[in-house]
Image (cartoon, rainbow, N blue to C red; front, side, top):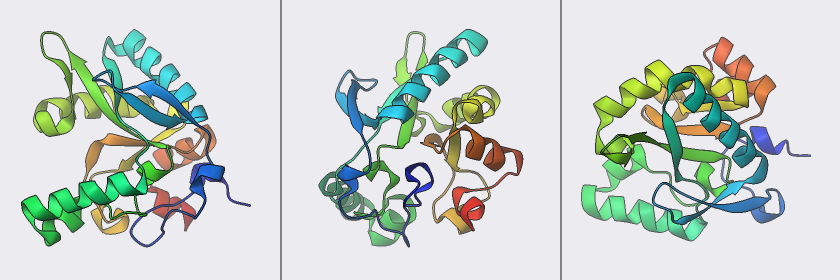
Length: 189
């Protein structure tokens, strides 16, 4: 039986067929008030994380991205290929069937800044990255999340550092990964 919260989806491990039978997705709204789907337990724990960070750090975070269909991921990948070339796209964007976003367990996080609204890392990497590193990442494991693509682990994960991309794995596993400075790949191996 698959432990859905430790399901490894990456360039070498495609999302299982009939993924929709594994995860219960619920609809919420993203930072632009657009509908987004998230796996139910992942969403429940994200709301706890969001409230905790607001209370402890006075920082408001929101969901910038969640579940993506295989078709949407394919379109996103080809948009990058067309705009930047295949080599660059391969370094940043998962091909269809190889994205954690197909599961609903991955969340791209935006941060709210007074007078600026929600900002995602791509809009101002330096500013947002500092907030993630100094104020948000230290709380992820308390609610079962990991930083999925940490710094200096690119050779293991296959992707560059993405401070905005968090992944729900459950509290016990998140604590193990955080304490031992592991990636999900290292934990599972």
